[in-house]
Length: 112
Length: 117
Image (cartoon, rainbow over all chains, first blue to last red):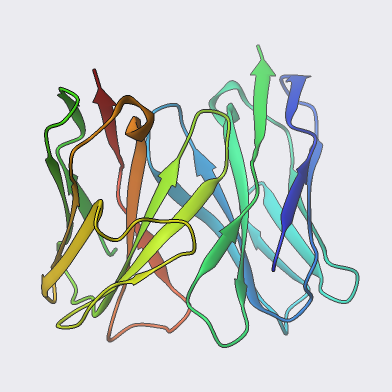
């Protein structure tokens, strides 16, 4: 059974700092990995999706990497802003399945 | 972009009553929808996979007679929590897969906060 772990559970940084969020998964037979953002009491906003054949994806200040063989992914946020404060969720989709397995998330606070 | 809506966004019901949550794909057809539950500070847990025109597939440990899922059309799936109890209080989120879009895309609704008193 796939398990997804996110470290740290919470992170507080001053505005402008670059930061890295970590995600690890136990079964490397994945179809893709996706990073989401969730604001309090809200649904999910998809940030980046990395296919199993890819090593990274970039969107603006966000860069996500994937090392499938070691079961790891990172989300890099450059020049953090208070508006980046949210919970970031990592989810993997198993090969041959539409189902997503989520981590518990990292709650990010960017202090002005 | 693809939009998924949920109704209601918040609902409070009394213990023992039933409550229905709707999930709609607004600008695409979805043969497959997913229902998740999220407890505070916990991950989203998949409850069931809803397939249009057929019975839903429930995850282990999810009572199908308590959480009734109906996917009667290509744009609507409903989750009915029957005989609700306080422990059913949670955040319920649906997602939908675009039948005509990339196989890997799922679009998430904004969620429904259920509180059972």
